[in-house]
Image (cartoon, rainbow over all chains, first blue to last red):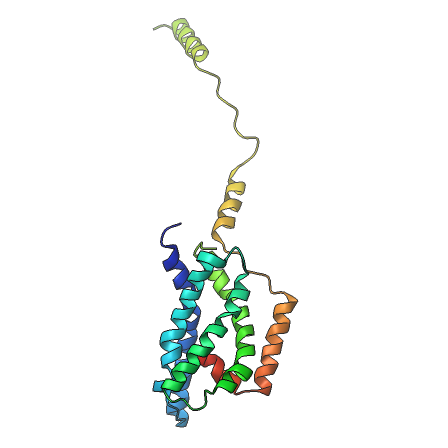
Length: 135
Length: 76
């Protein structure tokens, strides 16, 4: 199964954030309508809906094409927040999301994100790559 | 064709054909099945103690700093 390698690796990468997004959106909607919890979801959702899943897919394509013989997949995945954080900051600045400040993202969000990404890439994306006979 | 002629024909045919090779000494299917299973079932990486330590560390981090949770969800 050596055909469409880029497509298969992209699909394996995009699967996790797509599923997580559905869960997060559903949970948020329940909170919003059941408990009248208000938040600017229309502005916040742009980044996790459009940019983040695509970056996961592209990151896995890069891993399969160039990195897999040099670095473990978990370490490669842990480096993704270093790319996503500046992009998230830029988008939050453009969309005027006040609580997403630079200090919050770097000091509070980046360390656990790197660990969570390490675990998810090692155990889930790596599994999907093997399932699709990529890795 | 009479009986002796048939026997002679059988003997000639048998002599003309190369002897059949004996079969494998054991059943090959279990080995084939193992190979198929190995090729088709992905290897699930073993969860090491480092992974457990990292997971516990993240849980503690989120417990101490709950504001990190929306930031992570925002990036994920």
